[in-house]
Amino acid sequence: MHAENLAQRSDARLVYVVDTKPEAARALAEPLGARQADAAQAFSDPQIDAVLIASSTGSHADLSIAAARAGKAIFCEKPVDLTLAKVDLCIREVKKARVPMFVGFNRRFDPSFRALKRRLDAGAIGRLEQLIITNRDPGLPELRFLATSGGLFLDFTIHDFDMARWLLGEEPVEVFARGAVLVDPRVKTEAGDIDTAMVLLRTASGRLCQIANSRRAVYGYDQRIEVLGAKGMLRAGNLAPTTVERYGAEAACADNPWPNFQTRYAAAYAAELSSFIRSVERGTRPEVGPQDSRQVLVLAEAALKSSRGGRPVKVGPN
Image 1 (cartoon, rainbow, N blue to C red):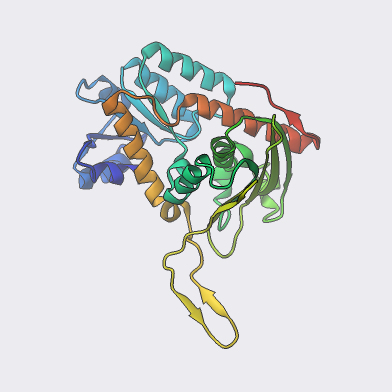
Image 2 (cartoon, one colour):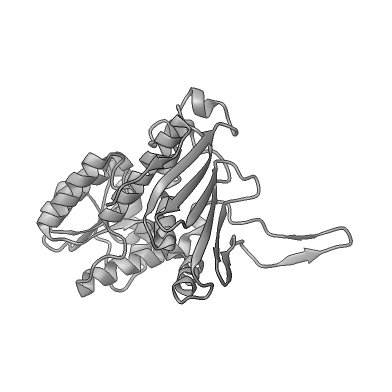
């Protein structure tokens, strides 16, 4: 998706595709007018201004550090790493190199969510009091992925923690989470994970955020946000392939939501890339940086600790 989005732009050019499997890189690169290369070649090429890192999570930080030392602007998929120590190391190296680094929390760039944020900031519903985030997958990913993903909170809910920070306007100071295995018992026995969760966040001023997660929504990819304020409510609902509705004698029906994140967030992926390129061209600070990735990791770790201990966990400042 990232490669195809890059190939369609007039303000950037996809030059290399790097993968641990050269044949896979070549198969992607050639139809898009790019070339297969290894990381050393890409980092050492003086014509390369920026790199986009969409590899497996465990390699994000090391590749970001290598890119920073090579003086390249960095777009890194979320999260930077699954450990705070590695994220902190990456942040230090990026600061030392004085290169911009953008982290791909793409949901901030969804057109509907951004419109909701603009109206919220403009005071359309007054002071925010409650935020409800629903994030449900249509079905389980492969169990071998779950076993290496870092777990539901670090792999899945991490998007919601970022959205919560963005919309609440305050850092959460307390996390209370409950997890369960309700979709498939193998999630616990084979992956040591959970597939269902509810999380409650509280800010210092008392604002509350509820996050609902599930690995199974048989009707499609369920992505909704609701914000309650002193003067009313804002809501961004699911998107569907069409807005066609059918009405009959017994009931009305419409299309189910989009079936996966690639289709649901296609516009968001394109928009975040535009944001990154714009910041590099203008020399401005990226909209989402590695410090944001650090804070959502803090929340994810707190949620994991809370779900295991059955009690709220306090979260300190950045």
